[in-house]
View 1 (spheres, rainbow, N blue to C red):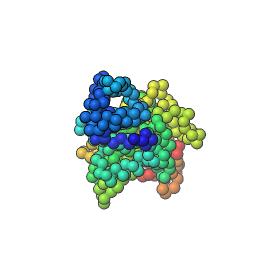
View 2 (view 1 turned 120 degrees about the horizontal axis):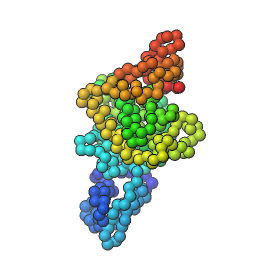
View 3 (view 1 turned 120 degrees about the vertical axis):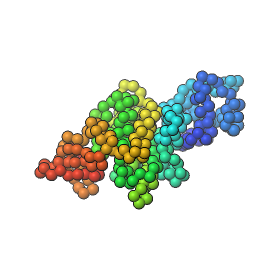
View 4 (view 1 turned 30 degrees about the vertical axis):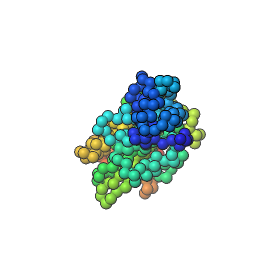
Length: 336
Ligand code: BTN
């Protein structure tokens, strides 16, 4: 099997099955024969899968007599590795589709929606060649970052769909703070900043049927393990990464595990109890890089300039202009 564009789907995948067996019995050697019997493919096929896994960064101790033992796992969101971090009953991350490279995980996730992928499915890739940002912009997506899209399928009223991105920004921030302790702030509406530079963007694409949401694809781009030097010159004033401010290696797997658990909690609150953005408003305000600051906001109606005074439970930002008029802003980009 080719190693360039590897795709890992769910547990039914033979390579995943091999990995699951070896992960479950990490200290033991499992013979090629046993792996072949448990997966229903030939020993040669097992060997080829092991080689492909080695190319992806897994390491095995192996010998022709005793078989294979897993000695090292890479920091990649392979379904079997994520599964170890998804407790029973959790929807987000239960099914993971991992690619070495795609154009955009949001676009690929839309294909999986057509394939009836369930609520909580995560589509992720090591790199994106056509990562999508907000307002038609691109998204720099080299190896080392966390690029993923979550499929949300629940018939919530479409008027609260905007809460999905706001809740996601809170979930990502929680995951980063838990994992790294770094002082991450939220810039309205849903960018995450570290020391004033962007480390995460969120792009939600929704489909509605009248007043009811059919599905949403929520894309999260987190500059986690990207070395500072890897950013193109044009981005260095605006963007940075967790790795640039951490002396510890950042684990994408750990971050993703925490993120999925936070998303599960916030999304279930919304789906089951109608707890929208208002439920985390105080937390958002406390983490805000926007409130109290002088801002210029590019809105569909034009530029609004003044001091950002508050945000409400609907995610609307209030800007007090110099003439004293307070303008409610529903959507836009804040320029500091
Ligand atoms: C922004 O402009 O701030 C939003 C950026 C969103 C980027 C993420 S990366 C994973 C997902 N796939 C995409 O193509 N875009 C989102």
